[in-house]
Amino acid sequence: MDHVSSSSYSYFPILPFLIILLFTTCQHANGCYTSIISFGDSLADTGNLKQLTTKSNGGQPHFLFPPYGETFFHRPTGRCSNGRLIIDFIAESLGMPLIPPSEDVRENRVIEKGQGVNFAVAGATALDSSFHEAQGVVNQYTNASLGVQLEWFKKWLPSVCETASECKNILRNSLILMGEIGGNDYNHPVEAGKPIAELKSYVPLVIDTIISAINELIELGAETIVVPGNLPIGCSAAYLTIYYGSDDVEYDNTTGCLIALNKFAEWHNELLQTALNQIREVHPEVNIIYADYYNAAMQFFRSPAKYGFTNGALKACCGGEGPYNYNQQVACADPGSTTCANPETYANWDGLHLTEAAYHVIFKSLFQGTYTTPQFNSLCPTSNVQARGASSSLVQSL
Image 1 (cartoon, rainbow, N blue to C red):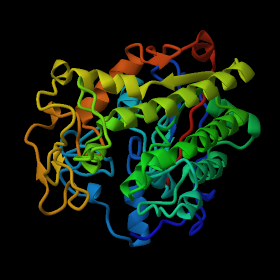
Image 2 (cartoon, one colour):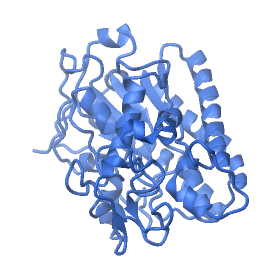
Image 3 (cartoon, helix red, strand yellow):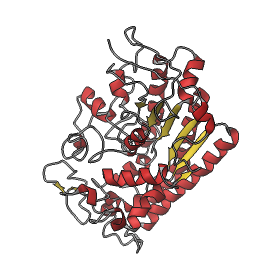
Image 4 (cartoon, rainbow, N blue to C red):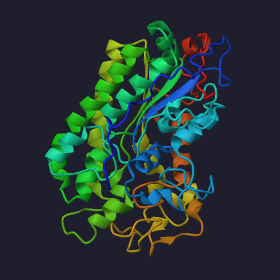
């Protein structure tokens, strides 16, 4: 697949026929945030890679075809699942429309007031593509790393605010989702055959990149940032298939997951939380929320039937057969792939991504439960946020 160049066009040009600002004194229906701004990879992409690959005339990713999207949207939307993602459930819980991909905004399509924008791109890494290429791993999906997404964001921001103070006001009233990002910095090399031990040196670099992006957003005015950790990758059908039959792996007797890979994910999460604590010390006025994707997901890996996953949490609903219904050569939606009849009874959708039902469990555990630090189950963590005069923006084509 051809790479999508981040410099092949001017991103978010400020056009005279855009309606730039519509400030109001009313808060959004949720009483807390006027918009959601998101960065990340396929766990959050609501259609950017779909748009970007169409423009590049590259090969179409398999997740742009049925059965992707079948459960909720009844068509493929560019989401790597059978339905909604965590970002969709967050938007719904706040009474907002679903957050559009930034490519839709760039194309001057109508964006509803208080909706926000999503810069996440499926396949994206935290580290720049040049780093991975130097290690011999080429990202076949996109070069829209976190740094590229941040540049897109900074080019978009002046289209909805005219002064630094107006921009800060928009950001301080926005819920910022920083990922999940970083998982593909490990996924792509493992899929390319690199041993997980070789990737340990990547982890501090990935964390530093995420923290740098967070600090830049804080400087621009962001005051509430949700930062997800890595999922338990040792429970991924893709990894379980890659390491299947190896004498060098050890399985958790309770879950059937790969112990070493889950410990690797836990180490990533520990370093991330340590770095987030350092930001909190420097910026006590900013709400830095760690979203514990790992332990929220481990609930259904430990007890799948308790959460309705009667067909288990490890085997993919859609894939190319094999012990976990995952095959690197036969992806979900490819000819020869198989799809389960009841995806809500599976936690794993296509080997790499989860089902809508699994994402909903994670969402509820985070924002209606106890799997955030500090606890964030109201989606409105401080009275300061509630008391702010909110600003909203409307971008639409004439």
